[in-house]
Image 1 (cartoon, one colour):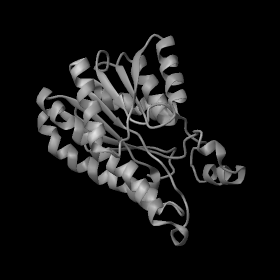
Image 2 (cartoon, rainbow, N blue to C red):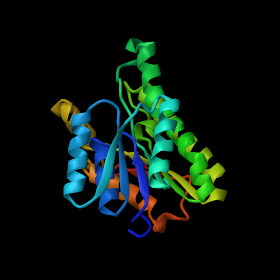
Image 3 (spheres, helix red, strand yellow):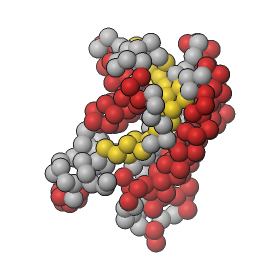
Image 4 (cartoon, rainbow, N blue to C red):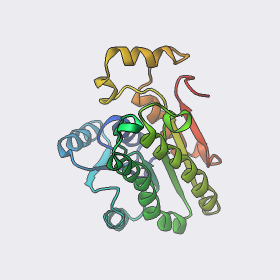
Length: 248
């Protein structure tokens, strides 16, 4: 896709699941990919090795997206070393699912901290540089749960719904400086997490999807690559649903 080759991209939570697929796809399109991870260095190294073996360029960076100071330090370091930062994919996220009556305050706070505050921290850290260079592509990962709700996910849905509002507001702020900000809303996507679900739960989800099947991480990565390309240069403030018709 035109417009990605030669760009520097930061993918938070980029070593596994959707983040891994996005890191691989952007590298395939010619971007230099900085893969953020929080704890699992082995998984990050594996993702890096896959990209390099496929002919791509990447590196890994460990930092906590909930810590604005750490985020800013790492972003500044990337910019100092690479000269610019063109693409930010806010993908890092966690779940702590349980019914509201059983949910601990810490379960709610931790999910909001990573998913919503993490998106805020990383976007704030890159904003001045992107505004100065008058170019940027920011893609935030929301979820079908943030749009339609889901039992047992009041914390997760709240965080992902908040990302939608954050996306629309920052898109308006940054558009005059040539920066696009969009969100991608995945439906039921096969990942390590969904693979751990009971078979009956998976069947119930798929039965509610008009296309009759789950999505893949590559489905999401392809849409994100499009949003980072020149073909999406006039698209901002949107939420792109990739859910097989589950919610329209």
